[in-house]
Image (cartoon, rainbow, N blue to C red; front, side, top):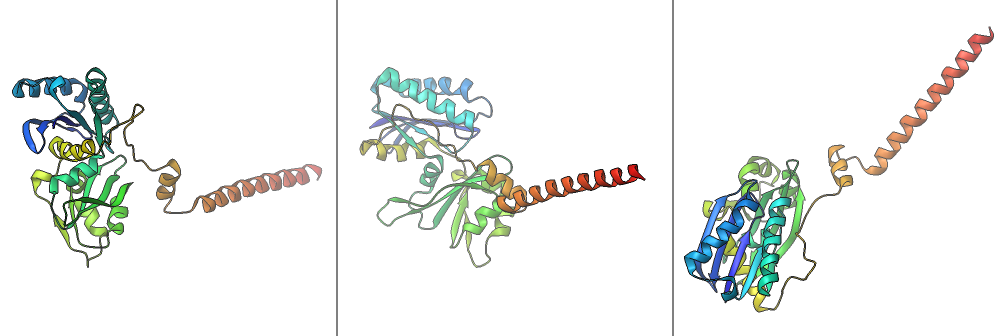
Length: 266
């Protein structure tokens, strides 16, 4: 099965054409702020290298997030366009799941990590079974390095750009009883080859994206962020404080008026 696979979830752009497990062509590049400009020329380049056209493919695969809002929209919109003109089936793969395919066959618990906004991270937990199936242990999460570290309860292999940037903060939050391993540098970034391999399994099972497909955005609510910023004071307690301040202010104003009235009658 020949497929075109694309990953634009981060500033790293990865494009590949696969024939089952064989990589016919691939190109990876730093595309920070330039996904829209670079993606189509890169796809054209791979078609020229392989001598294939989109009509000779059997399917399309794209990473769906979490990741950069703009990058995800560019990748998905481009592959949806290819689907429209070719009527090929399109499979979508969560970005963190695709990263777990970078380390296919690894027996250790896997934790791929990507940067989010406001110093937060995206992460999930996966494990490869003895029969070569990828099992999702924990679905996509978003939060601080401390939140990530505190969720780990067994030996784990951490990797991805989020780990590279926040390693010290994450390590400080992990129990000293937990063994932490690092993946090789080659597996740190999302890869269209890995996205393609994961997508091939979906296509073979007939799991194709619907008409109204949209990127997987994983973000904490405004209430959750306020809770974190408040030093983990509950919303109820915060409201109680606000009400107390308002009541005290009104009482003070009323006292001031009474005292002013008394002084005026003397």
